[in-house]
Image 1 (cartoon, one colour):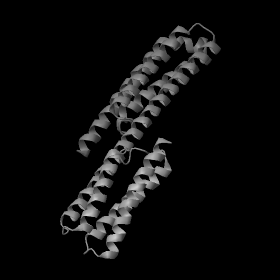
Image 2 (tube, rainbow, N blue to C red):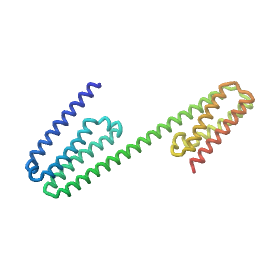
Image 3 (tube, helix red, strand yellow):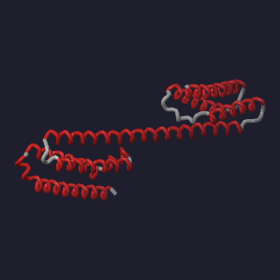
Length: 245
């Protein structure tokens, strides 16, 4: 696989080199006399031509970093943007062949600025998409984790003997579970540190509840269990209140 990738890269590089040589030779053939008449403008034209070719070569020879950072759709947009830049840049060179040097330079700089602005916008949207993906992954992970905690607690409660104390604990747990299920999914709120802190406390409490249920219940740990269930429910309520604010 690596050999195939390496061979493909070499072929692409050779193709780009041949293309570049052909374009540069064509440039000299078309504007060779112009180098004698207006060497300054000719040098600038060649400079912008080489810049365009360099950008084009970069996106063709090294697409993997673009795909990795930008993703396929945005990478394709970047390649198209670069192709358009090269075409417009060289069109400007032809249009301004008889124009003022300053005007030509200004338009080329405007074109480069436009290219960079659009590139920056692409990076911005890529960043937003990545943030959304990270947030969605966190939400799914936290939702699954909370669901797992609740399932484990429910299973542990099901193994306990029926009695007044167990019935009281089960009622408190059902109330807590209903409150959690009715609240905003865990992991969705990412810009409120107070909410994030409460979510961590709720997770720790659920773990503690599960640990207590693994041992034989007595008067002391039953009381602790009741307090944990009630305090965890209050934390869930407080979390929602902070989210609304």
